[in-house]
Amino acid sequence: MFITILSYCDTEIKKNQLRELLFSIKQKFPDYKTLVYSHYVNVEPEYYSLSDYYIFDKSNPKSPKSFVDWVYVGPQQKKFHRVGGDWGFAVLQMIKRSIIYLKGIGVAESFFLNYDCHPDDIHKIDNRLIKNLITEQHFGIFSNWGTDTDSFSLIDFYLKIDRVSTNLLNSINEDYYNSIPSNIIPENFWKSIVLESMGSSFVVYDFNIRSKISLATRALPLESNLRKYFDTILPTTDLLTREKCIAIWNNVVTIYKITLQINGLTETYYNSIPSVLSNHSFFCKLNQSDISSIIVVGINDDNIEPYTLDGLSDEYWSNNYHTY
Image (cartoon, rainbow, N blue to C red; front, top):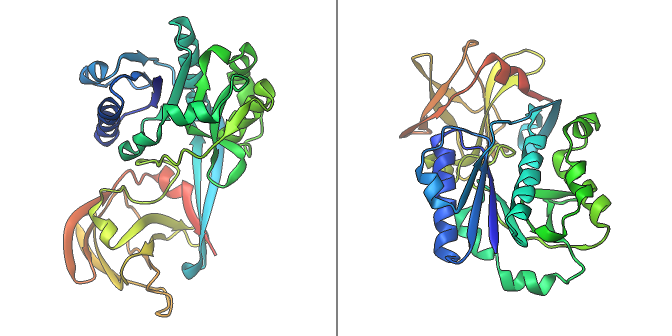
């Protein structure tokens, strides 16, 4: 079995995640070979030695499209929107070029993972299970993207490399991808070209492999010290007033105040959510307007290890907003 890992590790956290994933694969499946495909150049040589094959591709094509996703938080009676660039084709290109390379070296099958897949879930890749699920007529095994049955996950799937058709590879075309409406997400595009090239010759199965780092979620990293209080903290802009705010939800404990450092000033902010709902979430408006980073230093009466929310550029505040 081959395991192909798609990666863009431009931070130390992401590189550490890739390292942990590779260690977990080698520990649990010492006979499996790994191919890491990367669009990011500044990765130290140790990653080359951890994988059997490492491909660096300097292209990282961003689609001209943008997506808006949102989540409604009931206790706050607010809908939190996020505008983001579309890097879906960059992922699909990695899949395509990985397949072409694997075909070239005679690899018959590969499991595909994103670099942020949780190392603890690697044992769920079971070659015997795959053999039991799939027949000679099948091309691969795919997971639905969450509860969306119209989309296939791009982070965990299995392919018979020697059965992948030219039709599928040709469908992963930048001009074609950019021509489709922006409401068709990359995962939906992926399923559509699988259906077009494979018909019904595939299996749908939930491998249940979690993402440890994800750009799709607003939740805190699993290792964050703040998770004993809540799992989501979001700097957000009021679309009507343009005031900058902090929203917190999925609370573990009731939070009635939070202490923040902004531009060198330490201030305590109190929860504006009505008390009957405040055990679920926290919301406050910030006193400053020019904010590029926020440091959380206290929750309720607890002094905590400082946690920094950075990257809060003008573009961030424009692209992360809430409505009522």
